[in-house]
Length: 297
Ligand SMILES: C[C@](O)(C(=O)O)[C@H](CC(=O)O)C(=O)O
Ligand SMILES: [Mg+2]
Image (cartoon, rainbow, N blue to C red):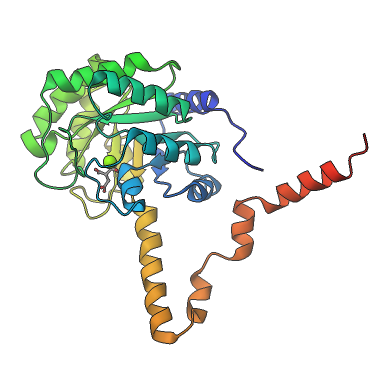
């Protein structure tokens, strides 16, 4: 009933333990708190909270318009709904190193298990678009250092994302990944890798987990979990996938409604009322009521 029973510090400890175990951890993007429940129910290892989804949800492009407060608010709503660790996209950290530090503490308070800070210039843009720019190494490292120093729970996972591959090539991405680890990054997110061997090169160069972004319609192929494991990847995100699936279904249903005058033919594809009730635990609330109202002081 209500929110998940696992505390944020426990989720962070769980994530650390699972990462030490060596498996590939799969983090589908939750496009709302309810979908986080579904991700847990289906047996995934974690939930991703995407900046692209947050922007799209507000009807905005992913070009650095959202604020740290909006990201923290949505993160809290999603993270509290699941026992799984949540990883959140903190974009560029929302400002200078001191702002990055405050962003980290705010997201920690929101209950996430980890976050990533990227090295794009402000305002950032989707990592799979052309025309990105990255900041110099010193600036990028200061962001990561500030993030690592700011956390109060040592288990909060600070991931450093580099977008430099699309700008200066793979060797630059490998160099930056190594420097990020020296600056305190617990994991590396190399954005827009061209192929599997590039993931492999980054994973071989650092001794921390590497994350793969399996976003659709982007610069990387959609590799299978087996392929990612063979390349040494330890975390995979499917950031916008569930939103794309849901919006695709919504468009088709609206077209059906226009064409057919009713949604009758769409009903078999819909999530059933009973399944929705299962996910929001209607039964748990009934048990609570029964316990309270039959209680005799
Ligand atoms: C991972 C990402 O940062 C996100 O916000 O989810 C995006 C995803 C996307 O736009 O497809 C990204 O920059 O890759
Ligand atoms: Mg993003």
